[in-house]
Length: 381
Ligand code: FAD
Ligand code: UDP
Image 1 (tube, helix red, strand yellow):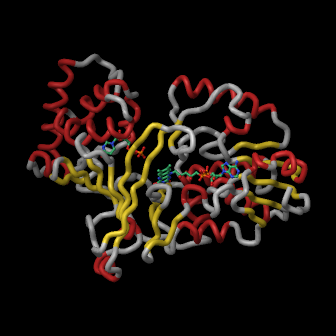
Image 2 (cartoon, rainbow, N blue to C red):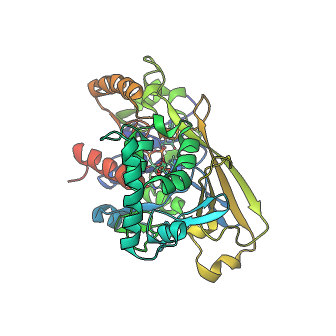
Image 3 (cartoon, rainbow, N blue to C red):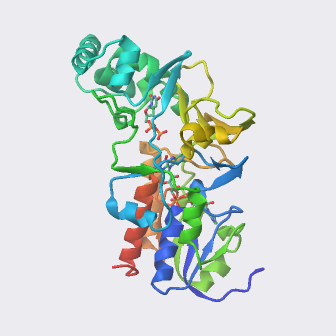
């Protein structure tokens, strides 16, 4: 092996939030750590790249949100958060609607102005839908019709969801749509959490602060030097794909992925909002992100005469692509459980995070998971 290294207490594979938070706690407890990362930079999916002075969320838009005060206080030790509140706008055939579904949306959809009128309208539409439907919604289409009725379903849900998941709404599980808030107040905040924001200066600042003083090796793939690495470490914390760890012996886990088409534009303000969803079928992308709006507000948007946008295309995962969203359907869950059974038998190897646990964790729950592993291993009390 090209490295000459001393032995360590913890070898941590992967520099995403799971690996970085775990490494931080281990180092604080006086443990010797080595963290390796196969990409040329640290941070996993929260990594940002500076383009034209703007922090571009290279692996997709990341908005930090949590109701867990301990997690919020933890991240705020390292970096201050700005006041960004996610409030996406939907564009359906050129008409704009506020999200999530709230009084602004109902006004834009039906011209109604009071909560009572909105409730009546939705009830009317639900009644019509109920006549054709079974009691318990058995797919996303039925669930959406029963929650919000046909106008909102046809305008804001059907096209977007079918593009995003690559399958008809009638073949998707009902629970996916229950994540979206439905509110009878004028409130465009996409999340219900108490705390929300973007790190001032970008996510790299948070990662660099977590990893300060920790030995890291970028451009280093664990599997290229597996035996040598294992011989160095008492304990391994692994945050890569679990099926790869076991050489895909039971088969490959599936993911849904996104292709980003990034463009620098010679205008200061392209769409006036960080996130615009395109909810009709005809537009091939699901949404456009304009990155400067995560960190610049009001007139400050015009301080930079350029802007960076990313169009997001939802695609099926194949080899060589970035694994983004685990497909937690029956088949993949069964396969994951086979790998998990092997993982449970390991001595001194711990699996954590989105890829190793094959679970769609948001950032805050990832941090919670890394902290609980640190507790389990007696690193923090
Ligand atoms: P990762 O960030 O994926 O880190 C794993 C790291 O391990 C990677 O850097 C990888 O290169 C490295 N690695 C893998 N295999 C090896 C190997 N063999 N050797 C060395 N290194 C290896 N969460 C939110 O809270 N809000 C959001 O708005 C949000 N938006 C998202 C948008 C998208 C498109 C996606 C995909 C996720 C989003 N998330 C969001 C979720 C967030 O990205 C995750 O919660 C977080 O990144 C999980 O961290 P992790 O450490 O588990 O994984
Ligand atoms: N969704 C939709 N229209 C939108 C935004 C979301 O129909 O404009 C649906 C879509 O099915 C999506 C689900 O709501 O999968 C949950 O949305 P969220 O933004 O939480 O999805 P994520 O991109 O985080 O998976």
